[in-house]
Image 1 (cartoon, rainbow, N blue to C red):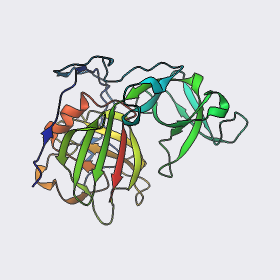
Image 2: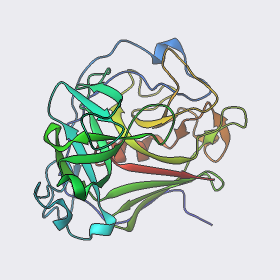
Image 3: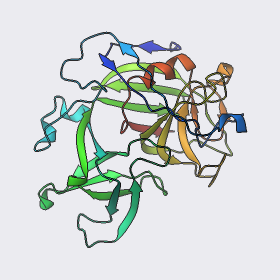
Image 4: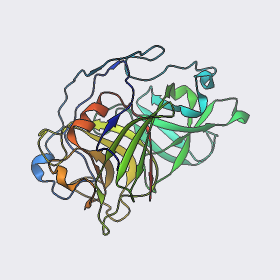
Length: 278
């Protein structure tokens, strides 16, 4: 039998986290009290261990001229962080191609805009980057100008097995955290696919339905077009009902134990890939 939680290894990082006050997407027992006005704060969480080669926010900084120089290339993903007020994504690596979307920086909840990079177009001499987009339909991609972002290399990824109700965090290919989770019901299932972390939220009531933290993902509910004042964004968050873990109980979000989400909140950077499978 799997253990309820297993931490494997440590990471040296101290993170300042933008705190905002809602998680759109939701579990089965959110109330209006959990959707207060946006506020801001910072917290610092220290993790022991060696952090050689890592930035203070847990990101490894690669060379922009050769981002693939990071160690263990296959186990790292590139994160593109916006540098200007808006990022325009095109259908092709060509400024004359149709615009897929324009995204503001900061985002609508006040956090930094970041993307998980899919790949680079060698024919465009690395002037363009293909990125996953936090828009409907799920899995949408677009091309952004490399000059509009900065690149960092991220060793973390999350895998969620909905059939097992289990979430695993990997660091550089090694299992780092394993924990049971609750997922969506049959009527409001957790979507299957590849997503990434777009924001970290701190609800106003750490003992409420969302727990102390919530990661907003780039994915959306496939059955709800709006929920709790939002547009059906899926998240990973804590819970005030630990007995629900292992069940199909939410509106599509993934619930985990509060102590685990608190640990992850101090480590996982924006752009962390999240693969959800059946």
